[in-house]
Length: 110
Image (cartoon, rainbow, N blue to C red):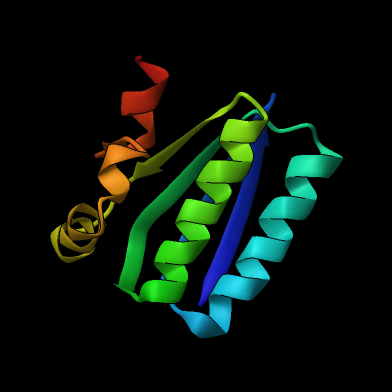
């Protein structure tokens, strides 16, 4: 599992690689929350392009960060999810809360 964080103005882009499960969800939550506060983040882009597996802990992480960003009047996006991961996001209903796009460029063009 690897994490990559990129800050562009008030938008945090988080690229996750590997499995988004119980072992990584807590660490990722702590790091995202710290950056939200330290850098006054308004928007969060979660890039799941290289995620190979997601469990309920990963889904909980996404929902929790969505609630936190929404409370700050910001927006959250998911990009790059492979079909199997996207299917889980749809079955869980996350797509009703967080828009899912093919790539970061799609969000920039909104």
